[in-house]
Amino acid sequence: MNETAPVVETKVPEGAKFLQLVFVDINGVPKGMEVPADRYEEAITDGIAFDGSSIPGFQGIEDSDLIFKADPETYAEVPWEGIARVYGYIYKDDKPYWADPRGILKSVLEELAKEGYSAYVGPEPEFYLFKKNGSWELDIPDHGGYFDLVTLDKARALKREIALYMPAFGLVPEVLHHEVGKAQHEIDFRFSNALKTADNIVSFKYLVKAVAEIHGYYATFMPKPIYGFPGNGMHLHINLSEEGENAFMGKEGLSETALHFVAGILKHAKALTAITNPTVNSYKRLVPGYEAPVYISWGYRNRSALIRVPAFWGKSARIEYRCPDPSTNPYLAFAAILKAGLDGIKKKLEPTSYVETNVYEMSPEERESLGIETLPGSLGEALNELKKDKVVQEALGSAYKNFVTYKEKEWKDYVSYLESKELPLDTKKVTEWELERYFYI
Image (cartoon, rainbow, N blue to C red; front, top):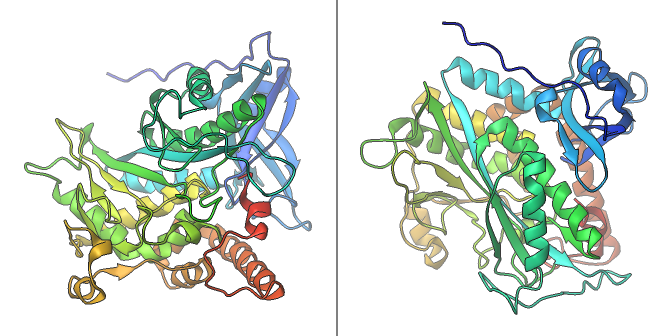
């Protein structure tokens, strides 16, 4: 029996007078335009033209005409503004645009599907809430810690409001809690297929920032906004499905498919950091002592490892990739991680560097004996690793050169800033240059 394709509503309700057409740039920052609501069907069928020359990571001014086509399955209404919003794909000359991050992920997912797999991801994005006082001296509104309630969690009502708005954007909230850092928080939402989860991360960051602004706060997903405080991570829970069944589920623990997938990520971990941790500030978080993994290893339940296998029951087998942070472009990050994991499956790689003890407490000699290497210590080092990794490069397709060019300039600008301030290159202090560039991501 042939399944009937779902009918997607293509008309904006009468209450919405305008429609936001949303895509992301190379940094994962939402960009877009608003059109009158009655152009919705046109946005789906013919698309809306725009100039991409000033979008980071896109075209040059000599050839910048692009077309945005709406994906009606992503339609949502913004409750507090009375407008609608939709994501989509970008085209150039009637073909998918090579620098469109959402299109890049779609391409990798199609490659995965040819091997018989679909991917599911569940993120854990962390964020800080601050009262900004006109300078970069950030005002900390609460002094709570991990899982603190009521009196110490001053943002509890704000988090509940965010959670109540989330279903309007297609997100299902699951857990709200205070994180380790003062004024640091986390709201987990239900996993979904990789493309929808990437969309959900963009929606979630927008929603958190908007609700925070309504209440006089600034929300930041910057990896390390304050030196000495825990960084913002975004652990990713990942599994693959094959013929409707969890392909990571083995008879005892993980399946062979899952182990090959883990091995692929471990093999490409150094290059992956350029994409999953794509800012100068990301490497202020990836330091020992704050639960952020820096050693390339894996294990069951071990939170000091780069890849952890959480305890699971029934058919919920998955892996947790712990180094990504919320500054990443989720479309590019998922594309690169899945490509690396698929490489492990195709080549039947076996994971090494297995460890069930605290990696941070090991001596360098102990880590070396187990084959445990270290992630890059800076954006510059990560970009050098990316240049050597053909598999991760292929995940980005033709956008690879744009990504490296853009990020190399970012690194050089930072180095020049440090030189102008006579600061050492290996400083772990959070600079004003970083706050100005990353605070609002």
